[in-house]
Amino acid sequence: MSQTATQWGCIQSPPAMLDWLCSHLADGLILNVGAGAGYDKRDAKKVLGIDLVIPETVPSTPFAMADATQLPFPDGVFDGAMAKDVIEHTFDPLAILAEVHRVCRPGGSIVLTVPRAIPRAVWDDATHVRGFTSRSLSTALTTTGWEVVRGPARIGGFPGAGRLGLESRLVELMRIPGFGHWFGTNWFVTARRN
Image (cartoon, rainbow, N blue to C red):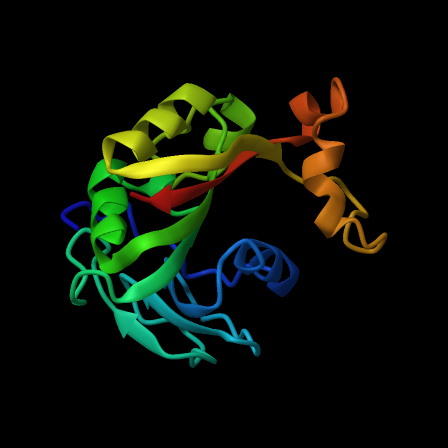
């Protein structure tokens, strides 16, 4: 990418969150866009991570240094993709969504999270370029050939959620009136390739 502010993905996401995202994808070959240090999924899913920069730690899964707007893969090779907190760091999120669409097989899915268009979610990270409203995220996906299957749904966390084992229940908790407004800083979406 041409912008230098998009050195996204170099921070390892918590494994529980990546497990949760990956659980929304079919078995097969999965592309992890903005993978950072990688993601070690030990089931029928095989995960290939890509990022703009080489991570400081050796990735635990196959990794490629690649620009998500120009992926070095043939059409339809992946069964699904995940992009956790990636496209908000770019000036052209549509180019990434279109390119991931190209490399996913027909019927393949993408799961992604992005910050909601609220100041505390967007501007607490100096590398964010933008946030998304529910409508803008749905429009970005449908414009690039995806069909929204689930969401956008608010997700987020609160202090102690991990210790209490509530990661798998956070989407439901964000539906509680007021709770999602204060703690639901991100959107979660599942979409299918048409």
